[in-house]
Length: 154
Image (cartoon, rainbow, N blue to C red):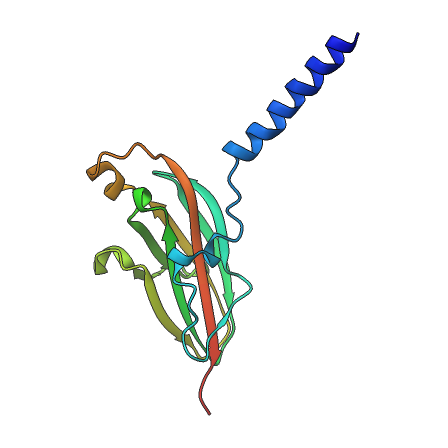
C-alpha cells in the first residue's frame, strides 16, 4: 500500500512539474524587455495591451477600443524565431483596411492618433521567416501587443 501511495505521489509530482516546464504564460509578455517596454515620454501602458501564445502561421484577430483625443503607440514583439509579425488594422464597421505593416517591411511599432473614439480590429499573422532562415526549429511562442497612450497636448 505504501509503495502505491509513493508511486502515485511521484507520478502526480512529475505531471505537475512537467506542466510548469512545458506551459508558457504569455499573458504579460508585452511587459518583457524585448517588447520595448521603455515608455515613451509622457505615455502610459494601455489596459488593452495583450500577450498570447501563438504558432507560426497563426492569424489572430484583436478588437481594441481607442478613445478620442489621444495619441497611441503600438509595439508588437515575439521570440526571434517567430519574426516577422505581420499586422493589419481594419475598421470592423466598413471592412476597410487602414494600415498594413507588410507595406513597410514589417515594422514592429506604429504611432497613431484619434480625434474620436474608434473600435478597430488588428489582424495579426506570425510569419516565422527569421527562424526558418536561421534553421531554427521553433514553432510556437509568445506574442506581445504593447499599446501606450497619452492625451493630446493642450
